[in-house]
Length: 272
Image (cartoon, rainbow, N blue to C red; front, side, top):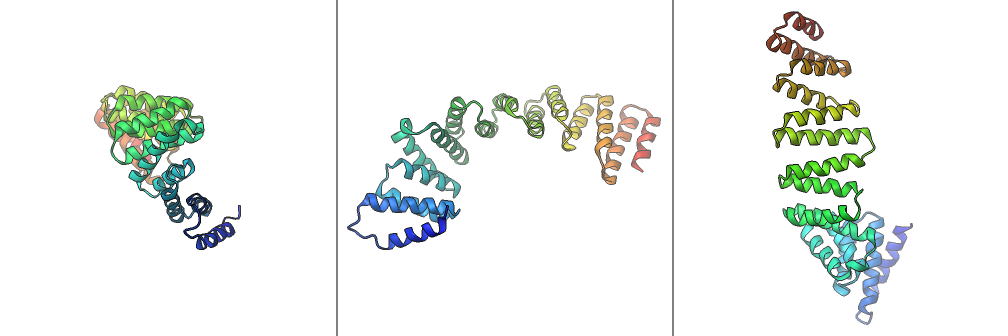
């Protein structure tokens, strides 16, 4: 679309509007100007124009939605929450499904930003209920639940999320997130180990799950399993300094935990 020329024409039209022009006509010009500004990614201009339109036709669904979205993007969360809440109160039944879901999603995010997890969860769960496969909404619910320290519920939604994800790297990251909650907040190292093993089974995209798994096995006195992690790390580590650090971990495990000096020497050879 030729947003630039259209914006120039609308700006020229605004300059000739006067008190004889109806509020509806003036608001329509402001609304179309806001949409052109959005097309040009001029968020400040878009927000200004939506605000002008809202002064004239405060109940218009198009204006309320546009103002709510743009004020959210600008970080004006109270204004966005107020505007989108008004849109739902006035017109929820007349909104198409996609727009209604977006409104609830943004209201959930606004409430999160404003430190209101109860309201955030209510809106976000509405999105998940209406669209059970909406990964963005499920992820947002998890964020809210974590901020409220509702760890078991957060895991429930993460398990739901991983069931929808198809990319192995995304699934691995979600399993890692579950493991961190189980380890750090629920005090369940066995469950965390299982989650990290699930992450690793998706593919070895980075060293972190193996390092975390090694630490958990060592803390649980599963030293041979910890050494399996050391060996797996050595198999994927290309950096000489990184290999040396991992091999030293293996040597320390053998010397201090397994009392196996010959095996420790083997890892020291790797480290040197």
